[in-house]
Amino acid sequence: MNKRIEAAYEQRPRRWVFELAVAVVVVALLLWSGSAVETAGTTQNGAVIAWNILAGIFHPDTNLLFNFTTQGVPYLLLETICIAFLGTIVGAIISVPLAFLSASNLTPKPVAFVGRIIIMAVRTVPAFVYGLMFIRVTGPGAFAGLLTMSLCSVGMVSKMYIEAIEDLDVRVLESLDAAGCTTWQKIRYGILPQLMPNFASTAIYRFDINLRDATVLGLVGAGGIGAPLIFAMNAYRWEEAGAILAGLIVLVLIVEWISTKIRVKLARG
Image (cartoon, rainbow, N blue to C red; front, top):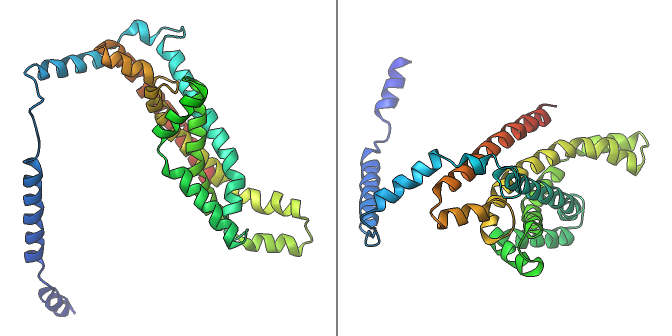
């Protein structure tokens, strides 16, 4: 038996030539790509600027970090959380009927196809574009960020909801139907218990994404902490930028820890 294994091992296909050729091609492409790097815009004091950035980030402005007025980091972080949270709630609510209409196991295929086209169209537009559109309509501020987060959430959340709906265990519904349950009872005891953990987990995951996107949307004036961050960086106030980044890091870590605990609890029951 051992001899047969050794003989089969010796007769294995030799691929070292192919692997060597692939490695040579990859290295050649990397070297060719490196030749296109331009350093003409680099200044002699670039290292000094980089050092100032790092020094400001690691020595944040504590006055701004612990300023509890509307100009301080805690208030701006709270505004960012509110934009992300309310945007997730609104997007999740809108996604429920849209997902049911787009589920091929519950609705006719033409209706489900139209619903999926709408969801795909919503997901195609970047969040930045939505932010700029809503700023033109409502003006700059947190409300524009809320509308942007809501619409951006619909695309991803609806898609995840559809997958959960199409994975429903129909045998549970058949059992309830055989027991003489009404439509509401089948929804209450057959559909909702299967969907709620997946729906809640998807909404929490989307909240994590919206929290980061809300920070970026602030750069275009859609509320949150992004605008003060870009203003501080443009004005070379690296201590203020460091304070804002420190607050963001702490906030994201706390939210990530809490959301992970909740998702694990929902998954395990």
